[in-house]
Image (spheres, rainbow, N blue to C red):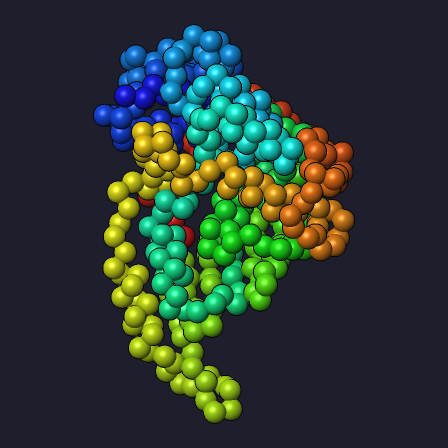
Length: 389
């Protein structure tokens, strides 16, 4: 049985703890660390983790506990140092998104993983959703042909108070705004579906949060060899109506699920009715999807547990996490410099280094409040009153 540690007892720790509890025969949570011992104790009590010890410092936990796996759930600016410390101590690491605010830090984390021989996985739990798995299966079938255009709405909504939490809303501590900390889910999905782009253009703004330095809205275009992807990243969209729409040679498919297939008249205009046979095949393929045994964080954590047990790499690696951060970095560079940015970014790029964005990025507004704690639950994915779009 793997001994698991939790580093960071904030809101997202609920998702990780619940996911680990789905695998009682494989793992046991034996330690929880947070700068607030009261928060760590509250998580232990909420989930009945009677054998878990509480620490007010991750270093103390690392020194005292014989851990096999740790979930790192702290603010993004701390991810690199914590990940490297645990890997070098021989502990496998699952780190929350974003992997780190800079490519330099991501590369240091990957170097520590290679040197240690341990596993490093970056959270991208939306790959473990049945609707996303269905889209992937449809694309992999080849039925719709080469992709022409992918449109992604990473639409979230957060009130002004969201940025009152001490580490949110500054380039130095949060690493960025909605593009990095919200849309990175959809950036990962875009690359999972389409691969890595070769160039990025973008625009950034802060439309509604005058208490944050960072952007709350961005629109980016990703260039591929013969296709484009369009991404809107937002925390200003009421209703959070998220969607992925894929237009390909033979058909259009989307999440929420819908399939449409046009056929041409002799003059090139669409014929009435379209390709009903292809639509029927696509609908049948979608309907045949076998539901995942575990979804979201539990799906990824189940894969990590199996990967440790078998010695294989996890399905979502540190390289995947770095790739997403590279695209975010290119979005920021394109938006700040108002130009198209080619990928990959080199180590010579001024945006590669740790601390670059705080020096280069505009302050749309200044942070006006800084509270240590906030009450209330965080919303991850679907809820009874807000179904997953």
